[in-house]
Image 1 (cartoon, rainbow, N blue to C red):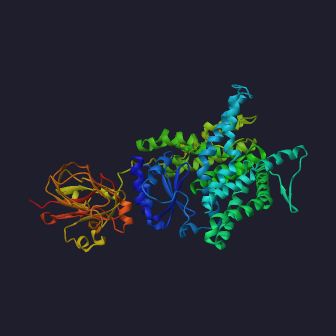
Image 2 (cartoon, rainbow, N blue to C red; image 1 turned 180 degrees about the horizontal axis):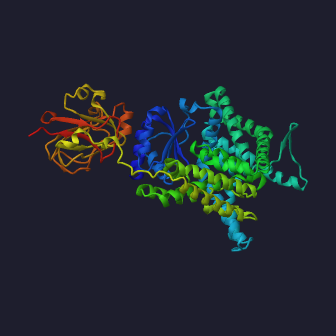
Image 3 (tube, one colour; image 1 turned 30 degrees about the vertical axis):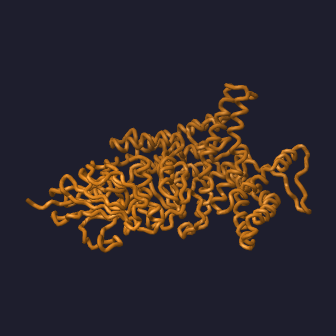
Length: 625
C-alpha cells in the first residue's frame, strides 16, 4: 500500500473529512483532533499496513506510522480542507482530560512542528563540535563560522519559532506573537544583558517600573507564557473595539500593552522559572543521582507511549540555555538504545519472516533515535522484549547519570547525534550504551518471548463467506470508501431494493473504476450514473450520489463513453467530491445488480468496511444448473 492509499484509508476510518478538526504530525505520528472520536475506527486503522499503533491521548487521536509519517501527512492534507494544526474550533474531545494531561498536550503540540528544525540544528552543533575537537578545521575558519551560524540560528531565535507555534495553539494572531518575540530579542535588551557583566546598567526605568535586561535567546518559558496571555488580551480588546476601528486599533492597543507587560513582568518571571527549573534538575541529578537517572531511563518509553515525551523537551532546552549542558539527553539516549536493542534481539531470534523484516527496519530506526516502530511494531507486541528494554535502559540511565554525562545541544538522541556528548566523560556514555544494549539483548533472549505467528490477511471485506464454496461472480468495489447497507441509503428506490440488490459506498475520493471486465452499457448524459454489463452478463448500475441528476453534469467528468469495452481497474469517471457536498448533495454511491432476478442471491460485503479497488464489494451467486 502506497502513501496515498494509506492516507485515504486513514481518512475514511477516522470518520471522514467532516469529523477532523485539525491534523498535524511529529516525527512518527499523525495527530488528529476529531470532533467525535467515537466515529473513528481505532481497531481497523491499526490493521492497516504501514500503521504501527493508534492511541487516544489527552484529546488527540494519534496514528503512529514511523519514519514515513511526513509523506503520509502530505497525501492526507490533499484529501480535504480540514485545518492543519490551526483550527479555531474547540471540540468537546479537546476539552476533556485532567489538567496535567492537557498541559503536556499543549507543550507537545507547541513543540511538534518545530522538532525538525531543532533536531537538525542540534545535529549540526554536534558536527561542529566534532570537527573542532578533532582539529579537522581551524576554529577561526569560514567553515566553522558558517556551521556556527547554521547550527545556532534556530536556538538563538527559538522564541520566534515558539511564538508562531504557540499562537496557533492558543488561537491568537501569529504576527502579533512574533512581534512579542521581537520585543524580547530587541538589540537594546540583548546587548544590555551582555553589558551587565562589564558593569553596565541592569535595565531601563519606565515610569518607575524596572525593565530588566535579560538574555532571552534560546529561552522557552517566557515566550510561551507571553503568547498565552496575549491570546486573552487580544480577545478582550477585540471584544469591545468597534468593527470599523478594529483592523488598526486592536493590534495597536495590544502591542502597546503586551510588549511592556512582557518585558516588565512575564519575561523576567518566565526567565526565573527557567533558571529555577534548570537548577531543580541539577539538584535532582546531584542528589538523586543514580536513582533519578535509572527511573527516567526506565520510564522514558512509557512517556513515549502516552505522547508526553515532548513535555520534557523544554526542560532539556532550558538547561542548555541556562547551564550550557543537560543531564536528560544522555538518559534519553539510553532509553532509545534499549528499544533498538530489544528489536535487534527479536530480529536475531524470531523465525517469523514478517516479524523479522519489521524488527530489522525498526532496529535501524531505533538506533537513529526513532523508537516508535520498535516499540509498537515489535517490543510491545511481544511484551517481554519491551520489559527487557525498560530494565536495560534503566540501568544505562543510572550509569550515565552516576558519572555525570551531559549533552551540550538538543538533538534527537541516537548514534548520529553522539558528537553533542563529546567531552571528558564521553567514554562513560559509550560504556553506558554498550551496557544498555548488552543487558537488553541478553534479557530478551533469557525471557524467551513467544514468537509471533504470521499475520493473516486482514480486512472484513476480504473474509470468506458462504459464497466461497458456490459458483459465483465477484464484483470489486468501483470506488474507494466505506461500505453502507442499501437499507441505509436515503432514497427509497435504492433502500427498498426496487432496482435490485447491492451495496453502497461512501466515497473517500472522487473516482469510479471498472469493477470487472465488460462493456459500458449506459452512460447517463449527466455523468452521475453508469450502467455496465460484465463478460458474465451481470448488469450493474453505479449511481454517484442522491438526486445528483439535478446537477446536470456539473462536477462530473466521464473518462469513457457508452459502448466502450473496459477492463477491471479502468478509470470510468472522476467527480468533484467536495464541490458536490458543498452543493448540498449526498455523495453516497449505490452499486446495484439490476438483473438480480437472474441469480440465486446477491451478497454484499460487511457494513462499515473500508473499500479499496482490489476489495470485493458484491458476490453474485449463480443459480444451480
